[in-house]
Length: 177
Image 1 (cartoon, rainbow, N blue to C red):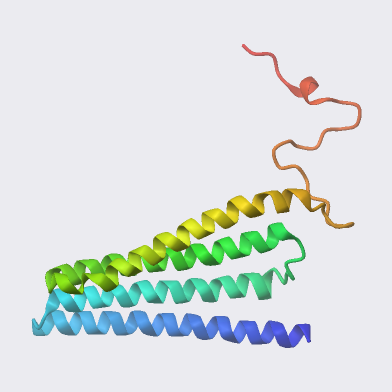
Image 2: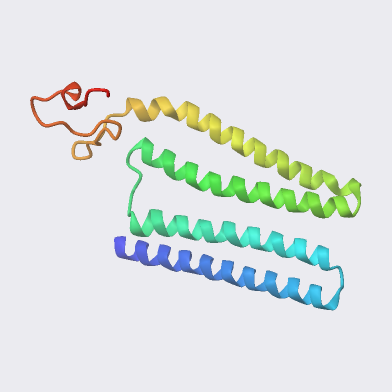
């Protein structure tokens, strides 16, 4: 079952990457066509930027799935692992929402200001997702500290390097000049 899962996530990840490349190709083609024909060149360019932003988000999700499910092959046994994965995924989505709303605001401001409601709601959604992610980080901070490492999964303290037996940290310090 593990092999099937790895193959499935590899296919999904590469399909998302292929879709992202196709979106970028469509964006470049439409922008170039709009530029050369002179028909709404700026609107076509803004549409192309929007497609590229979506392509980057799709590529990031594909990369995330490949790294988490195929390369790392983690089952997220500890809260710290789940917290990190969720934070990475939500960050991708928040950045994509923010950039897309910025492009839509630029495009809408050129047309009718009455249509600014949708881009404004998109900005509100991005900010709400960011606040929610921050709240999740704050609330889950205690949970990750309270759960001890599993039997074989003892983590090293990254802030302090391992000391040889019988030596304290103070004995490794050099006198100040």
